[in-house]
Length: 163
Image 1 (cartoon, rainbow, N blue to C red):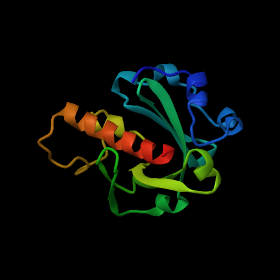
Image 2: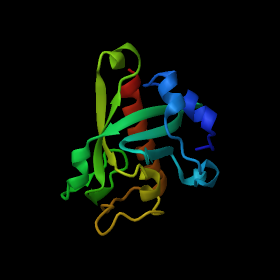
Image 3: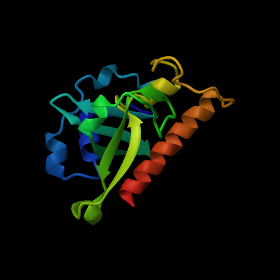
Image 4: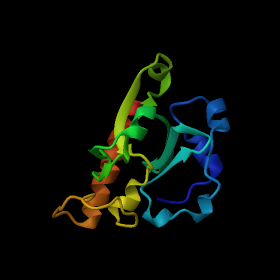
């Protein structure tokens, strides 16, 4: 993924108002992010732990989503699998919900996904971050195929939000 700046991220949100996008928390360390290892940029709002955001480049343009997570996920201790990168965690996967884009979202419709709580899927897939013993199931796929699968899973989620 190419590096994104704060302005690009804020204008890329498809499921919140321009005012909400202007007020939300964008990471201050964008220049220090490992962009070559990111299929998407994901972050949690340090001031509001139930809020998370992600930005991805699809068809040559950035698309960003505002997400909300259930506070109940923080106490969960059973093993769960992220539906984006297929990494398993003990307590490290959250159900995150995105309001649908446009009129459907204004009417309260949303789409949910089980995703790594820290939104570090690209780093888990590449082995740059460790989720612990048994986090990555043995597979015959190459790293490139795993990266493509992760990107396809995320693109499918974004498509459900924007449909």
